[in-house]
Every structure is written in structure tokens, then in C-alpha cells.
Length: 328
Ligand code: AMP
Ligand code: MG
Image 1 (tube, protein in one colour):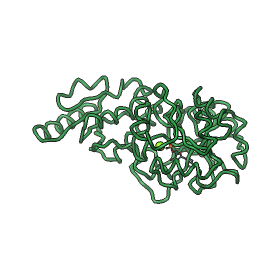
Image 2 (cartoon, rainbow, N blue to C red):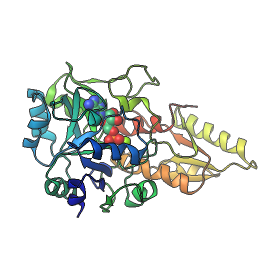
Image 3 (cartoon, rainbow, N blue to C red):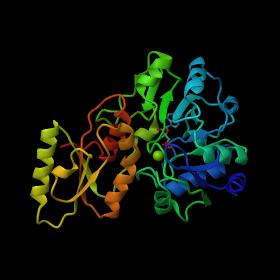
Image 4 (spheres, protein in one colour):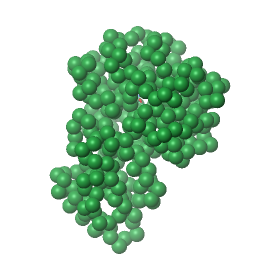
């Protein structure tokens, strides 16, 4: 039923291993416009095209670089989006006017069966309203898009919980535009030299960005989120002080802590992102925790900073963006 909705030019939300996606026929401009309308997404923010077999890449791109072949071999199906020169047949609506296209082969049995049965490549951004945290659970999809799309395939919670790693192969050396579960170290093992976009960790919002998605507000909870930096002791002290400052005021407070630190705090809604020893758990939980603060009506959220390493880069990147790069 979902596949026939796609063939009829409709929109369908489907599960993947990263987050839920909002799909439509990538070759049908009218269907693509429905995605942007349902999300309230700016039309220059490009969509990723999803396929269900490696040989489906060829018609979508002008050429397949040797490095793309290597990445597909190692990481597909999986959470890696590869940017290449687009083929003329890809509607510009999909690529936000760019002459490149991002392609991904997801590693999820329902996503694969759905794409195969639809019989076309599926353009799909994350299935959230624009600017909201990406949906990792069926209820998040319903909160944001129920009544705004033609179909929803509900499944279990997303296994990874952060969107795919995006790597641009149209430049040399290749550059990671968005970190994800496929880490920089893993990419360098295959490709050698790989650069990282300055936007990824820095507190900058450049005028001209190579990945348009990077310039928009992202992942924001309804409450005001700030990241608290410093040594573990400094972080605890700063947050405790802030909580004490607001005590007695009509302000609902939250702390995004870890399994190791959450017992320290005595005020507000204290939620753990997971164990500091388990970056994958933190990545899987981040977006759903931000939505939990919304459900609790939390107005001000203090998030403990996360120590940077190869495995935590992706979750840090999303946390900083969600906070609009506001640090204390
Ligand atoms: P979303 O599906 O919501 O995670 O959004 C997809 C993201 O992938 C966009 O916001 C861009 O950051 C990135 N992306 C997709 N296609 C391209 C492209 N052709 N060039 C650069 N970045 C892209
Ligand atoms: Mg998104």
C-alpha cells in the first residue's frame, strides 16, 4: 500500500536505521514539492535520494568516482550518504538547485522492501517538521506529520538515532559535511585523506555553505537549550549554580546529564543521555531526550558538554546545533 502511494505521487514516512524518513518519488517534482510542504522545509535544502541496490546509483549520477565505489563496497547498505555530480534526469527540486546529489542505500529491511516495491529512487529528508529534532520513534513522526502526509509505516525505534554521515566526493580531498555513525576514522581507513567541513564543530554560520542544510536552525526543542562546558567539576558547578539561581522562580528547568552524573543534580527534570562510556547510546537517545523535555514542558535545558573524540563527534555536532551554538 505504501509503495502504491509513492507510485501515485504521494508521500510516505518509512523507518530506516538512522531516523525515520519522509519519502516521495525522486523523479516526480510535484511529489517532491509535497515533502517540502509537509515539513515546512526551505526549498534550497537538498534531499537525499535513497536506493535499494548498489547498481541503482548509476542512472542518478554523471559518473561514479573510484572513491565512491570503495565507500559503497565497505559501507553500503548503511548510514553513509555520498555526494556526487548529479545526472540531468534528477529534478532540481530534489537537490535544492545544486548540480550534485546525495545518495544512500539504507540498511533496514522495511526501507529496502519499500524502495524496491515502489520501483523508483525515493527522495527523503528526516520525517520531522523543519527545525524539530529528527524522529527516532513512531510517536515522534505522528507528533510532527500526522495528517500532513499520505502514509506512515510505523516500526520499532531507530537503531542509530542520528542521521547519516554525509561525504562530498566532488572535491579533493573528500569532505565530511555531516558526521554520523560512520566515523571520520573509518572513512580515512578506506580513503586516506578526508577533510571535515568547518561547520561541523565550529561556532560559525557562514554566508556561503557547501551543504545548505547546515545553515538552518536544527533539532531544536521548544525550551531554550544551552551547552555547559568545562571540566567535569566545572560543568557540575555551573549547572548547580544555574539551578539554584532559578529556584523559586516560575521557570521549568531541565538537565541533560549522563548515567554517571545525573545523581549529582537536585533540582529540575534531570534526564540521562546514556553512559559517557557509550557514544552509540548517547547518539541513539539525543533526539528523543530533547522531545521528552518538550513533553515535560521544560523551558530551560542545561546540557552537559560531551568530551570530543572520533566516536562522539556526531552527537556533539547535533547537540551544539540544537543549542544554536549557545554555551555557558
Ligand atoms: P535531512 O534528510 O533532513 O537529514 O537533510 C539532508 C541533508 O543532507 C541536507 O540538509 C544536506 O545537509 C545534505 N545534503 C543532501 N544533498 C546534498 C548535496 N547535494 N550537497 C550537499 N549536501 C547535501
Ligand atoms: Mg533533517
